[in-house]
Image 1 (cartoon, rainbow over the protein chains, first blue to last red):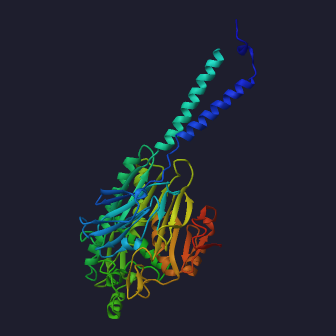
Image 2: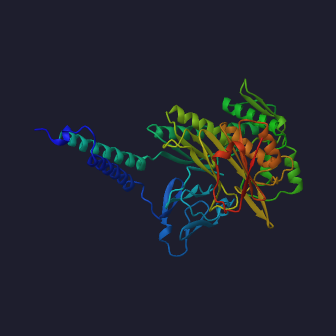
Amino acid sequence: MRSPAADRRRPTLWDGLLALLVAAAAVALLFFLRPAESNFLTASVVLEGETIAQYDLSALTGPVAVTVDQADYPLTIQLEPGRVRIAESACPGLDCVHTGWISLAGQQIICLPNRLVISLTGASDPDFDAVTG
Amino acid sequence: MKHRISFLLLTGIFLLCAGCAAYGAVQEEPASLQFFSMDTVMTVNAYGPSGEDGVQAARDAVNRLDGLLSRTDPDSQISQLNAHAGDGTAVPVDPDTAELLSFAQSVSQLLPGDFDVTIAPVMDAWGFTTEARHVPSAEELSAALALVDGSQLEVDADNATARLLQSGMEVDLGAVAKGFAAGKAEEALREAGVERATIDLGGNVTVIGTRPDGNPWRVAVKDPQNTESYLCVLELEDVTLSTSGGYERYFEEDGVRYHHIIDPKTGYPADSGLQSVTVVTANHVLADALSTALFVAGEEEAIDFWRGREDIELVLCTDDNRVVVTEGLEEVFQLYDPDGGYTYEIARR
């Protein structure tokens, strides 16, 4: 005996509901698998291509000063909740000190004479792919 | 029953596909390489299966040029050219070096007085090369300025030789080398099979193709006054953006700030009323050269120059905090922070 459903040619209300459920499930899946957003902001310090330190700026409660003595031109990195700068440097040009504070994911401070780069990652990703300037 | 089973099966496949799509979007990370070259930090990001090969090839291409063009490397061809200044020797150079020297001369002719690759003695007098930055004495500056004359550089592109006619002259390709390297890096990426990439050579940005999601790349322009913000964002494909500004490299003496973009006419840091110039064009090396030359030229001359060409667009940030955007960028330009202290206007032809 054939089921009544098999005899029907036109979709029923239940078919429509089921289709809606499937679509809702797919949307929910996309939502749950989206990139996780967090408030974390991490400063990575890379010297001569090697990561020498990482700091979670979002977990800081007060200012912290870190001296990088192993650099050719020793420098002092100042960390505060949500931002970082190079406060002092023995490098000749001081371009790194002039850069000032950075606080947004994707930003960098570069000390060329030391071949040192401080990069910010985490938090909400920047809404652009590259920076000119 | 059969239909219901088919329906459930389709449901499963649909959910699986949705899941895969979402997972893929999360996982699509580019091959990325950061390295020091040409006295700056460079980052290449390349998407797709050839990404890893592409970024390595791009780095090799840039490093090769650095070896040819560096003025601080005594073995480079530019150092050889400078060492033989005034002794009559036609120094053999790589065809790439000859091409770049010829190009630099052509920019000097396009914007006379605003651009000169023989500016090196003046850069040295200010200490921007040696990093012992200081204001030179009037005598020192005048002696250095006497050695700046692009017409005394002879380039024989057919025989791949170059010669400086006056003793003491020196060439510095710092204003064009990164742009030239960007072109070679893009070639290397494309030869490796990469179709989507970003190349950042110390703030000189080239975008290839589109983002992986098919949309244009979004490139931010630095705010010359505030490192915690940006001037604007531009949405672009297959172009190079080069920015020059007095904020990049400078020193202060007796309370006065002196930046590193020297006006070849005066020997002093350019004071043309601009804080930064961004040039957008498909021609990598032109973008690099013009951002420096138009920064020296100033707003009026820069806009006049733009009106005479179809292949460039500009974003100028003036000393009085106006952002002047040429009309070709009108649809892709967005002020980053409307409350950031800048107003913007569109320059029209």
